[in-house]
Image 1 (cartoon, protein in one colour):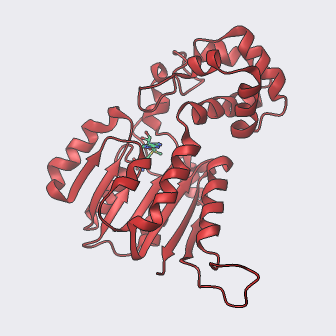
Image 2 (cartoon, rainbow, N blue to C red; image 1 turned 135 degrees about the vertical axis):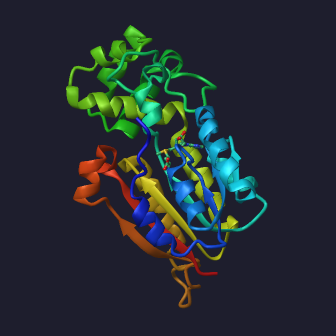
Length: 281
Ligand SMILES: C[S@@+](CC[C@H](N)C(=O)[O-])C[C@H]1O[C@@H](n2cnc3c(N)ncnc32)[C@H](O)[C@@H]1O
């Protein structure tokens, strides 16, 4: 299934007029956001570490020529951009195309190799299980999947060393834990939290004054990181014991969740949250 962009209207509202503006789309996916930014008159630099999206990126390049540039890299490479931008936008997680192909190993629905690599490089989920200690695996399940009996499940998984998505699924006794276990392994395989932290830390220096950063998150682990980094940026600067603190560098512009109607049309939107901030100096 083609990916349906989530919370795109809220993102566009948060960004305001984009005519002549320079925007970074950190997560190209199927290009739904990039296309909307380009249609609104922006110049777009788009990142995605999944080589399978290149064909869609080439189509946009053909149409929008020098107004569109695709960067086939992890979005932590934002730190290497030499310009300053009017907006940097993150639509986190995985796309419908990634979930729908069983061979990529992201989904417990179809059977496939236990892969889960967005970029197709580095260690797979099966490698991660084979190479982690029981304690490390339990930490991943607890921290990224909120699995209660994480030590017990980690031991079961380590003993069985599953190689396919269905082999892993069969080891999970509580059906409610299946989606969170898959999510936890995916986050670890792709170092999603390390990538997000590195990229967000690079954002303040890459935004113009008046520039905006907007993030759409899909689970509490990534939402917590965005919330805590945005809180830091929107807090007054300096020693809280001193009488005069410097004004915060950013202020909050918008928080949004999908409408009932969007969720009815696109179940992927269910857990989405959008947060945006604007750089004041
Ligand atoms: C939810 S989809 C984005 C969908 C897109 N906004 C659209 O409208 O089609 C997330 C995309 O971000 C990519 N991605 C996730 N983490 C990434 C990272 N650290 N660096 C680069 N791309 C990443 C994934 O490969 C996926 O294609």
